[in-house]
Amino acid sequence: MKAKQPAPKASQEIEAPVREMTPKAALPSGKRAAPKIEKVHAPDLETMPTEEIWGLYRNARKAKNEAEVERLRNVLMERHYPLVRYIAERLLQTLPKSIELDDLVSAGLFGLMDAIRGFDPDRNIKFKTYCSTRVRGSILDQLRSQDWVPRLVRLKASRIEKALQRLTGEYGREPTHAELAETLRMEHGELADELLSANAKAMFSLSEKWEDRDDDSSVEKVDVLEDRKAVDPIGELHRRDTMLFLTKALTHKERFIIEQYYQVGHTMREIGEMLGLTESRVCQIHSNVMSRMKGQLGERSGTFLT
Image (cartoon, rainbow, N blue to C red; front, side):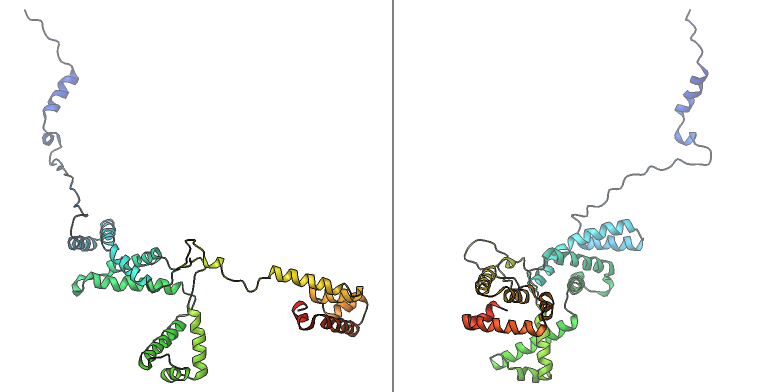
C-alpha cells in the first residue's frame, strides 16, 4: 500500500493557483495591465547635422521643454564657437595689446546665446550672417562699457582721423591745421581743443613687454619708465654736501634761518617767532646771506637753494 501523502497546507493551496494566473487575470476586473515602457535612446547630437539640430531646437521651443531647449542650445553654441573666436581674433588686431582674447570671446558668447534665442528661420536669413552681427555688437558693447573715455570723444577723434587720412591722400602730405579746420568746418581754437582731447583716447599697459629688443630678456615697460617726480639720490646728496659746505662759514642764527627756510619750509614770520625777531629782520639777514652765497657760487646758487 502506498503511504498517504500529507495534505497540503492551507498556504500552499492558496499560493499555487495565484502563481499560475496570468497578470491580466490577477488584476481586478475592468483594468488592463500597464504597457511596457521601452527606453528610447536620445539621438547622437555629435554626428547629427546642424540643420537637424536646429529642427529639434525649434520643436523643443514649441513644446516649451526648457530642459531640452537648454541642452540643444548648448550644442548649437559649441557648433558655432569657432565663428565667435574668429570674430574676436579679427577685432583683437585693431585693439591695444592689453586686451585679452579670452575676454573678447567671453563677451561674444553672450551675443551668440542671444542670437540663438532670437533667430527666426522664416525670415530667410542665414544664421551665420545674423549671428556675426550680434556677436560683434556684443563684443563692442563690452569694450565700450569698460572704456574710460566718453563715447562722444571717441566719435570726434574718429572723425578727425578720417579727415586727416583723406586729406593726406589728396595732398600727398600731412594737411596743415588751417586745411584740416576748413575741411571739418571748425574754428582753429575748437579744432585745437578737439585734438587735445583726442590724444587721451590711447591707452597702454605698463605690464606689456618691449618688442624688437636685441637681447632675449623680457623687460616690462614699467621697469624702464622714468619717474620724473622722484628725487634723484645723487643730486640730493650733492645738494646737501654743498649746503653743508656753504653754511659752515655762517653764524648760528644765519645757518638756522637758511635751514628752516629752505630745508624745513617755514616762512619768514615763523622763523622770526622762533628767534624772537621781526619778519623784516629775518628777511634782511636772509638777503645778506644770499648775497654772500651768490658771490661764492655764481649762477649755480639757485640750483642748490631752490
